Length: 312
Image 1 (cartoon, helix red, strand yellow):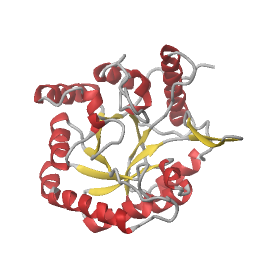
Image 2: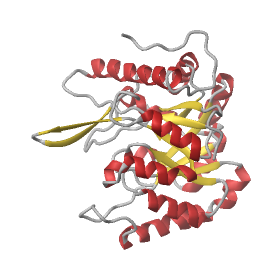
Image 3: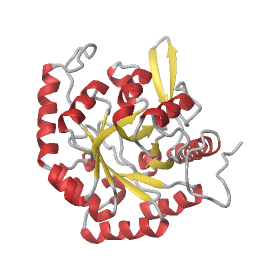
Image 4: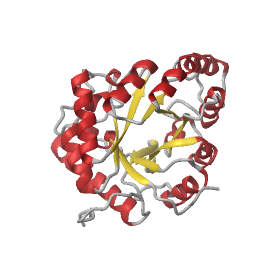
């Protein structure tokens, strides 16, 4: 049992502002990249203003992995008193800019001052999807991932970093847990995404309860479900405004997860409106989420003179 009253730091996944060119682009078949309207150093200024403790960043935010750029980001994060987490993939289906090997990811993370590297597994699942947890085709892919992680455990130790494996849109909780257990290393854990379970037909509550004891990282998301004559649809929404019980999720994490921070993530997709209007709505969803997390769920350590308040 963890200390349920312990401070929990609040970070933001830069994907929350992906329409503004941060994080990564997702779900596009052709031109997937949004032009950056805000850069990482400007975001650090806002993070302090908003009362965030850290940022969860990708190669898209870094723009380049040149040593000079990584040193610049490290110095800026230290100057802003922000922790950094580094988010990478092996073979992202929509945005290859975020891809990396394990070795390169660890070395780049150290150079930019990040203390945790989160990996998506990018598993190709067999069809039909239902009932494929621990499927032989999946396990063969997990074995390949295991080999690369295992090979780089000495480097992980040398650099003093933490490694986190996510239940991304292509992995069941049991598969991530199996991989973490096989690696059996104190600096290796799981990143539990609070909504990704639905992408493999797994219940979010059951997934979170399973993964919490292994979780050293969390993508804290909310989701709105809509059922209409065209089917069942899920839409990203501000934290606390969707169909997930965010208070219960946080309580589960406090009681069972060995983590002291959460990373919130909002997915706002452009609809019929212009990109400019969509960006304004995306930013408002970000501010709404920070307001709810800080003032209702009491997440966040940084003191701010003027707390963030969402617009009425």
